[in-house]
Structures are given as C-alpha cells and as structure tokens.
Figure: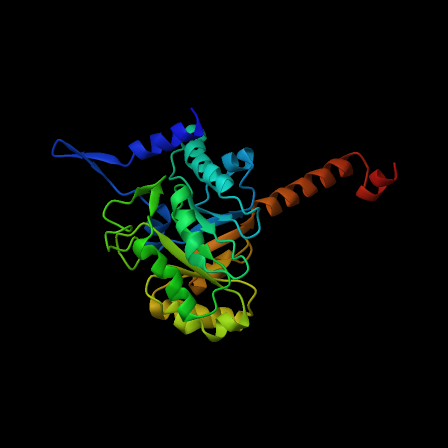
Length: 289
C-alpha cells in the first residue's frame, strides 16, 4: 500500500452510515479526548520530516502527539506533506496493538518578517495535522492574528477536505475548545521576557487551546500555569521521567518528553559505551587505535 493509499484508508474510517445514508464523521482528535477526560497527553518532538524510518517509529509508538518542527528543520512543505501521510499510513499498517494514532501538530517556522497566517493556511492544507504549535508569541494582538486564520482558511482533516461543518467558509470555528466539538488545536509558545510581560493577554485570547512554556524561569512558569488555569487553557511543558509526576501534580497537562534525535543520540551513546566497556575499551582507548 502506498502512502497516498494509506491516506485514502484513513479517509474511509471517517465515513459512517446513519439511517441508510452515508455521512462524513469528523476525525477524532485523541489528544482532545485525553485532555477533556482530565488525563495528561504525552508527546515527542521531531525534526526528521524526511526520514521514513523515523516516521515509522513515531507512528507506531505510544506517543499521544507528535510535534513536527518546521522551525528547526528544512523549510519544505512537500516533506511535511509526506510525513503527515506517513504517520497515518504507517500507524495503520504496522501498529500491532490497537491504539489511536499519534496526533501531529506542526510547529511553524517563524521566518524573518513573519506573519503566521500564511504558514498556518499551508500547514492545514498539506495533510492530516490536528493543529499548529506557534513559537515566540509575544502579544495578545499576535495571538488574535493567529486564531483569526482559522475563521476562513480551509481546515484539512485530510488533504484539502474541510472538516464537516467546521472552518473554511462555514463561519464555525474548528478550534477546540472555542468550539467544544472542534478538532483543531492552537498551541502558543511563550519563551521570551516580552511574552511573559504580555502573558495574560495571550492566554486570555479566545481560541487558544494550549500554552507551552520554554526557556523561562520557574517563577515565570508558575505565573503562566496559574493564568492557564484561570482562563481554562491547557498548560504545556517539557518533562523527564524523573520530574513528570511532580509537573502533572502541579497541573501541567500537555507533556513533551523531548526530541527523537536526542533519544537516539543518548541510546546510541549508551550502547556504544556499554559495548566497549564489555571488552575492556573506553572511547579514548578506541580513538587511539
């Protein structure tokens, strides 16, 4: 089965029969389902959009969501298009134990002189992404501009197909929780002092689904966590197995466990170190030979 055929298979899963008539059903966003049930959602980041083998590993993993990072990868929407289809296809072909496929949110590239609306529109057209992850948000006006994109742009649950009754020119927002039945998420990142100064106007913007803190002090993180709880925005943060329990207990709900390449680098390093150690070699010894 080709990647495109896999996408067609996914499309058929969104068709139900009611009263003898075939109707389209909105795709289920498992991340939203988890968050609405009060459970945390656990995700991983990737910049390997052009690597099918890594896409297969991610697609068949137990991750609830994947952040496809265009900001730190090559600016290539064709690669993103392929990656989005591969995740759906590989999950349904190779996942051996039943589980919802990881939802993919796309981190925008944030190029110089940046207006996010073009990138958002392109991202939502190229494949089955469930939303966008927007870096370096620094004002309420910027947050409003981001959310405004979804009022008219074509929202694509599958290549070029509008979500039924949402987005496009329906005047119905596809963004959750602004629309309780929405399937699209808008995640903003506060990662600068400017963003912290304007945190309340950012967090209080209708249409914001989640807020990710990064590069901030613990005090700033706590401030933003309280604002998220006040305005019922999902708070998102990075965590490790060692500190994730405390962060979830504090109220963080979208948890990023790191980059796939970082995990590969760590595992590879540990394996090579253990292998050399087993035969009495150290990395410095091996380098001298």
